[in-house]
Length: 262
Image 1 (cartoon, helix red, strand yellow):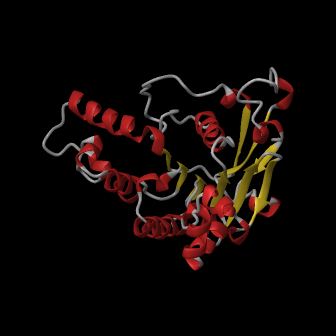
Image 2: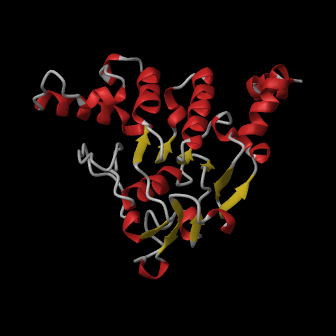
């Protein structure tokens, strides 16, 4: 990991353990946080994976807020707040930045993307624009994100708002994307990485976590460990299901009472 630390916009993040008030209270009681000392980031793509409740979104949110992003998503210029639900974890994280400074940045959070789209429409509605003055929505493709399907509005942000030379933090970006759109997002990521961008992504998608030049951290009941794509449960279970759908469906859908009758 140390070979990567000098080349990314974000090298690593450290937990200020001596300042933590108590590891018995949320969010510090999450095992991934309890065991966290520091986490190094790949200069291209870093993935955080794990079961629901493992702390992925909590850690991603805290990292984004510690870097100056709005807790509900957007660039560092967004300040809207629908409801203050983020934890205090960001106060105890110390981001360690690289030598280069990104020219672009975005915290994409699927859970609160609707709120982001609403804020963009509201800001454009409050502003006065001349004939040649761009609206905020023009940076997202020019069409209100609320006037598109959920998946189309997601992809509009990836395609139009992400401009390269950027640090992009994505929390479950696959939430509204079809498999073909997930593949398209992988291609878009590659274009942006070629344009000196760095990604940190929390995901459940075995498609999205397939980018080859990356590191995968799995949040487990024992803490955080590195793993490979082929070793992830997401890959293994998906492959088993696609290779043996009849057998897996039979095992899943067989009634226990039927087994007792045999």
